[in-house]
Image (tube, rainbow, N blue to C red; front, side):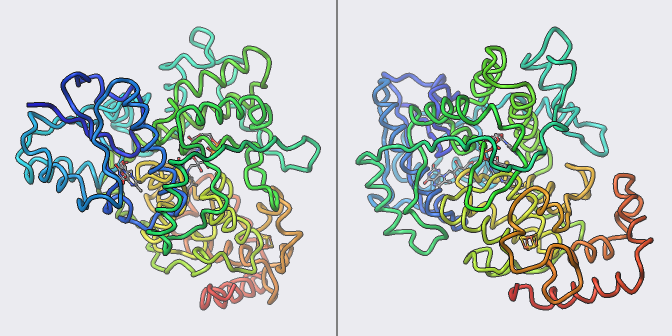
Length: 507
Ligand code: FAD
Ligand code: DLZ
Ligand code: SF4
């Protein structure tokens, strides 16, 4: 009688708690490429290719480390989900061990179906790969009406000791974001590209995905992701050397044709388990101590990981499943077709869609201030835009995608995650990018037939939600500006927005 350890597609870590509970001489590990996981949303082709290839490589690493692994390839078995697989193959197991899953959907199935269907007892372990446990987060959040990431982040700095001198933050300041808002004008050379050679496993998986998932969004031609732990480590080293020194300065910048700038591209590796978040932060901290990267860059980067990443996960497990159904702004519009085709005259949007389709990637400001901002201004049904983000990015898992989209972008949780909506007009995009220079629309106007759609839609958003937001002290200035505007100008902008809202697909 043996124990079975199930390793999910985003648990590709040799430090996974599951491994610590099992004996390589007696027990077996199980990994499976499953139809339900690959199609519960229509994931981007590169996301599936990355996950399947990383899973196959990791199974090999496990075998090298002395484990016996039963690996089920997508086209070589008929099990559609884990409970069918356990019931079909492992009914005689003494016990099935699994580490807590990242998504509520599958965790619910683990709790409700796995044992009920197979009769095998299931043991679920806490996921030690995160720095803040759901219990710690719950204690921190309890009694607070609104949460603020900044205060959570300070707790995490103290808890991890990262960039700390005793009880004080290194540099005397917790947050250097005010130094981090520069547009990119080309003075600093862009980092060299990192490419990986493809092996047989990659080639087999790429051809499997081309064959089985051709109707999913995206192309595979420019697949550039690393698919092994060693390649993820190389990506980390490349980031620390070439990108981190300027990460802070250009964190919010956007440039036509430049899809990554100084961003790390590490999120898929961290989310899949190929990189450990604490080790990534320690590597960045070390670069500061050795003088290779400035404090504003290193602090900004570490904040994204021990701050935002842990904060959104905490909110997810605190509030699911009700969180997914929130829609406090009462939005109900469908997502325009260009979110899938990329075909729109709005140059900023077209650039973000191109990056998304070609690479299953867009950096944070593209997601938040362009495609996300536009969905907010339009009033898209939160469920529709959340599903889109879950489908199109290589790093997308419900626990991280949902709070970012529903809370940060759509403000659908009533401001629990963030104190004000990130709504912005075209001038923000114009300030942070070169997009408007290449666009058919005029970013300087709001009511003419060729005016930037973001401009009139922004004021329409502000106007239609005045009940909710005019009392928000962080938005008082905006409402004062609206009151002071010439009423004829306001009418013209709102009329232009109404025309756009009548047929957003035409933009
Ligand atoms: P960098 O800019 O280099 O940032 C460094 C790391 O910080 C990232 O690798 C990531 O691990 C972490 N990070 C940064 N911002 C966030 C954040 N807001 N939340 C959580 N972690 C963060 N990130 C995901 O990992 N998966 C998602 O499904 C996802 N969906 C998003 C949806 C929307 C609408 C928005 C606005 C953001 C989303 N993010 C998501 C957060 C962020 O955009 C990505 O983590 C980042 O763009 C990944 O690229 P990078 O590794 O180059 O990031
Ligand atoms: C995302 C994904 C995909 C596309 N395919 C698989 C798979 O075939 N087998 C698997 O174990 N995991 C896959 N995953 C990742 C899971 O969806 C992920 O582990 C859960 O959603 C928990 O975050
Ligand atoms: Fe985007 Fe408006 Fe600028 Fe065009 S003018 S790139 S639509 S912000």
